Image (tube, rainbow, N blue to C red; front, side, top):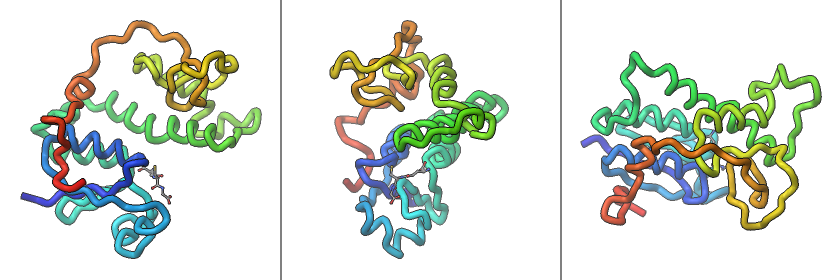
Length: 199
Ligand SMILES: N[C@@H](CCC(=O)N[C@@H](CS)C(=O)NCC(=O)O)C(=O)O
């Protein structure tokens, strides 16, 4: 069988790749890298010159970038039924790239305090964080979605934590959730264990 390895750190976006690997149902190895040391060492830079996680190696193929890893795994393991048929991928690609591009940039910029100068939104790929979150929540109306950043000041420290919001910011009200997509429903460890053959 072709070898499959996840390079990650438990406190990282590597958990996105980990989730997808679990969904495939195939065994894989895990290599845990430490920030600033093994992640920047020559051995790993040969795999991902960015010195970032996650990355996967599948045989001779290396894939980096969470969204690319997810799309690659869905294609590499079609029996897991994780992607729509190729002639019906418009919506799939649209939101996969939306999450990896505009939404991620908007959230990162917010977290780091970068502000798009007034009137320059048309040149920023994500426009505004508020627009990104509104569209995301409209398409995926689940609790703890992407919170409107312009929400009023926190009223409760126990408010649910939402993507792109400060931990104490209250989430805006959401409509009742539709049935969970299959991938969410199936995202449970098998027999309480991950499929990784290494930690
Ligand atoms: N665009 C990349 C982002 C990867 C990324 O920024 N990973 C962080 C951890 S969440 C990292 O490895 N940081 C280590 C560093 O830059 O030194 C992806 O989607 O995979």
